[in-house]
Length: 427
Ligand code: GDP
Ligand code: IMO
Ligand code: MG
Image (cartoon, rainbow, N blue to C red; front, side):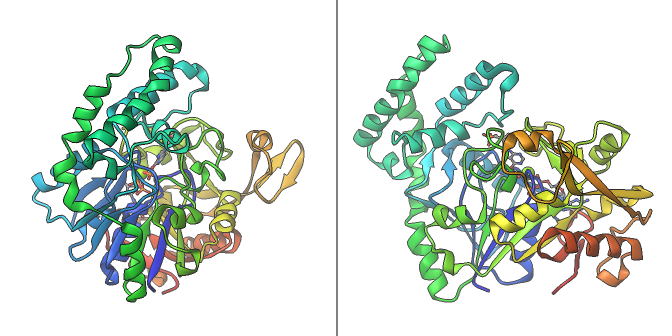
């Protein structure tokens, strides 16, 4: 299976890091690639009880023998990149080979400044961004005033580009937001300071990946963010500024859609969301607090508490549709062992009507009330189970019911954070 996409099917934090790490260690994988987003991601990998968090780096950085790639669609903060690499090196981790696209756009410190100022200005309408400068960096890219990795190696060009990028930004900062202007010299100096260390990693990653696929090598595309955070297909405007859906992988890596063999949607056995925006199955009662506590639902990047709710099959079917999922990886089934009965949202009620599919407009989605079906719980600890047959009958029935209503088969189920805490359903 040469090209495999792993992506988030809900609002992020589904366990993409674990799924990527699992695939990268059970089958020989040659490349693990990030294609969108930046260090707004927070992916957790647990190996032999040791916990690692990756943000900008692909999780493959922990897989010896695999090459990690940050492709053109990613927005790269060199500061965050080296902080993360140094953090792993300081822990004695043998980090994998890393390649960075010459065409990837750069996040400088001013992007984070603008992100935070814009959020403050939005007041009660704020998105609840991670404050990492992701939106402003993608805005510069689309406005055609972005700085790319290749620009860091030519001081003259770099200065011209930053001059152009800061021209309008500084008017906004000083005249609208009442802030100090950002100095071009300081930004040039900041970015040049990373150039020497970065240069040996930089290459044409589209060429590299296409050649690898031509040679029959296996490439794993590790999604960041998720379907419902996609700027086109998510709950706009409460989204991130990139395309984390499967189609975004082609654009973000420079490979054609015909290259992709498997598209795996990672989905939790319940739902969480960080930041603002609609969330039909969100719980505001004891069950919500219990999901949050038992699931350890605290953001890896920002430390924010995640909003929690039951599994939403309408979201799952939507993710299956817009990504062309070939399968799901269902995570955190173990967390549901505390409930007598487990509600699952099978449809919405919108303004008195039952709706089975994602509504067309955001206004309708804001009005969506979950229609629940109830499943018997298993009231036991399943974290030691290693095969589908070992799962209690009610847990098996829950997985089978989700599979029937979600639009794609479930190839595996996570029963704990560890690499080995996995049950294969369809091998
Ligand atoms: P990502 O952003 O999609 O990679 O997910 P995060 O790392 O932000 O959040 C997922 C959390 O769930 C992490 O703490 C993982 O270690 C943990 N996790 C992943 N799969 C499972 C599972 O099957 N069971 C349990 N209990 N935890 C899991
Ligand atoms: P992983 O890869 C969960 C959310 C933010 C905010 C919105 C926009 O770990 O699943 P941004 O900083 O991207 O402009 O913020 O998107 N968000 C995430 N939520 N997991 C993530 O990544 C996220 N990355 C961004 O909370 O609501
Ligand atoms: Mg995360």
